[in-house]
Amino acid sequence: MSLKHKIFYKKFDSLSRKEIHDLFLLRSEVFVVEQNCVYQDIDGKDEKAEHVLVKKNNKIIAYARVLMDSDPNYILIGRIVVSKKERGNSLGSYLIDFIIKKIHEVKPTRLIKISAQAHLEKFYKAHGFKKTSNIYLEDGIPHISMILG
Image (cartoon, rainbow, N blue to C red; front, side):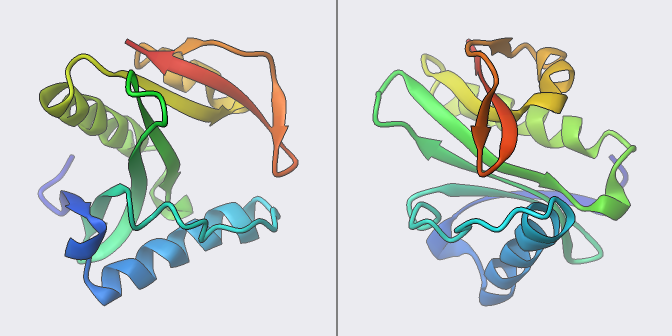
């Protein structure tokens, strides 16, 4: 990544009001508008999550959240998103690699679980994830469960 990109790993209470606004804006731009999927994005989990922000020129261009699962053997990564303008230059890989490394530093015995959009299976497999379910619909979009560990 270039020097213009900075990555941050923050608890909800450490996020600025602008960061909260901008991460919800990015999630809405991609998941609601671009993917034409009306769903309840603000689901009550953000306050308990840790948030990974990739910024360029102080603007959030990629994001994911990290949550503890109800099963203590797992950590969940969700709401993984890259701005449409920033796709195609390995930013998604940069984000996922950073999160995996961070989780392994903090909770090395935990397995990492994701609910991936089915068309991204190859991308996540390239990062070591294994498919653990058949395709299912989540908010009308085909998904698969995947685990790393």
